[in-house]
Length: 121
Image 1 (cartoon, helix red, strand yellow):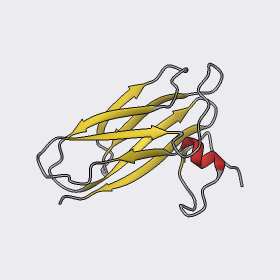
Image 2 (cartoon, rainbow, N blue to C red; image 1 turned 90 degrees about the horizontal axis):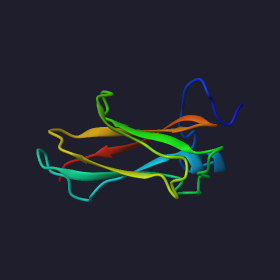
Image 3 (cartoon, rainbow, N blue to C red; image 1 turned 45 degrees about the vertical axis):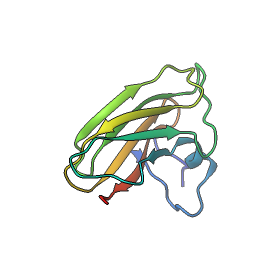
């Protein structure tokens, strides 16, 4: 079985046993501990946080995008190839709990997805 696919979305196969490829490419979503309905909050997404992803002209994260559980587009940032660590921030206001889906595109290893549940407190 191939370690990644250029034809589809790459997702973590076993969250308890990440491969080095998954660690380098997984978009990790960070949320505040307290999220309230109708109030803005900051979300950051980092790639290469678990294992540094190379970011050079020949191998880099091209962009990071954020969607909700219904695949509603929430935002996107295009990155230059020499970013030290791909990390972007978004400000969101949600009316109901959802699962955020972050996507990162590596020019050599394709599209990768990370998810995180947003629950209101």
